[in-house]
Length: 419
Image (cartoon, rainbow, N blue to C red; front, side):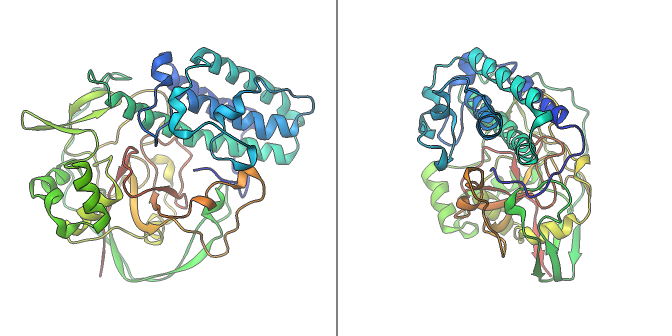
């Protein structure tokens, strides 16, 4: 989920922006032990310690190594351990075996971060514009890893039989269930989608281009836990009519019967979260569902998933900053669904659009251009951001993408239909 920036997007001093991003990552890691930060729960997830080191390797490699004369690496072994997918940067440790990196310990990784932070802040005043743009890119890259950091830790802790909480639960005020879905109709026609050139964007959001929409309507809110429980009670996971062939095979091969982290205890649906296991909030958006599940629910409901272009047209000029995003270390979960709200934040929303390049897309030259473009195969686009997405990171043109079976992210459902 990384890319080359197409434009500078922040106006505050770069050193302050850098410190804010790096400090939040450090705060997210504060509750973890060395063991917590080392273990890898599945191949799709990475250990917290690896996330902490990888984002630091990014700054050390593409800014300090390439743009600061005389800089010497903190440890010559680290590039092999903490490179992710950059073929141009040479050999690297297997992704599936990142949990075997017991050394360096968490304390040494944090010391590595401190070393690189000091060097970056010292270098910023004299860096050329190309290096400053790479710092901006690195900050957005680290924000992506902040979300992955949380969802990977959540998945890890869910494997522990005692189901530990990372943070204590916040006291909640009871919230009424939202009313029936209201549909926002669109007459169709040509619309402009993609990044408009204002502020930062990843390369996959460009170029801006025209899309033809057919008349359709989009739901004014996401699907709730109570509505999903009705889907389960009606046999939604056992009725092949609603499932894509690949999805039906996935359900049966993996004995899927509910969203990830859901369990029924004494007749009550519960979910596991960063605050431990608790009864589901019936008014909250359903989350941790795959594209297969989202598509099956839409079929069951007599609707479909919106296309990426329909979602962007619906978002229009709405300001994403008011959504429920990650602001600080602490409890993270979706807020109750609300009529006319929740378009940004809370849960990533699956679209029916394949993650493919826009007309005229060109990957950037060099190692930092390797991402996005080479992953445009077999994945689907999600929009809007989630409760684990750092505030200020999401926008209408933002293209998140995952494979259709993946659901350990905060992923939910908004319906659409033809009219």
